[in-house]
Image (cartoon, rainbow, N blue to C red; front, side, top):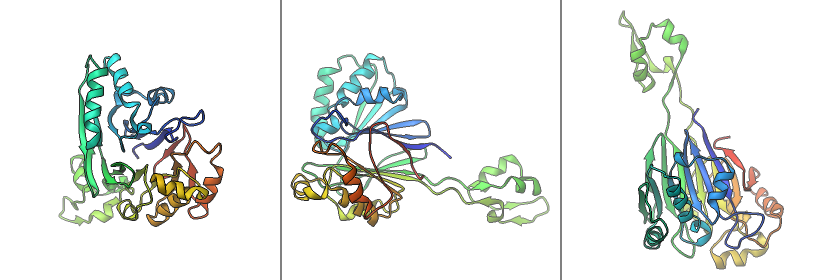
Length: 306
């Protein structure tokens, strides 16, 4: 089974605190790294967690609020100082492109590598990356400015051929890939062995969804239905529902209700307001609706599908 993990680099919100770094995560899949959001100081969190920048080729920015993107140009500048050669692709809302290009031109005056910008502009889920057994789909959230969530979905793998069948039916090695893809096998004496006899089904495809910052969106539950691991905006507790509505954020309970509706496997609460010294109250509020809930914290790494 290929490695599929999510590491929390930062789970705070707009106002800095000593407890939480601004929003950023690393999705690891099959030795490749994908960054989601890049708040101020993300490159320090990246180093603390011992990630290698050469494996990071795609960065996804949910929206252009500073706590999700102010660390981006600093990170890219450090890549240039390290004489990086590999291209980096930034996937971000179309509204972010102009200011981003101006910052890059001003601060990164020696380009040792290419920086590509892929604009996101959709009102329905849209495939934005398809590579290495993994797809990434962007979908619209509802915030004060254009904002997008991201769904990382593993492609369905091949069936597994049974070793005992290889010996029993004297299957040549060059035929095995076709059997894994679904073909039957004909023996030397003309007997057709059904594929279902020769193989076991592939492991279920795993998925991870990132939803921050947003009010609860009914359509999102349909777009990410059955997701194994869900990270959802839970900036406030129930006592501040009115503030959540006014600022276009969610409460922990609302995040849990989204997880329940989409039949998620596990929920991660994050994007915590600086008002809270401890998030235990928010965890309890969420667990009343969705027991398999955890609090995000810097350094937390979760395996998708477990």
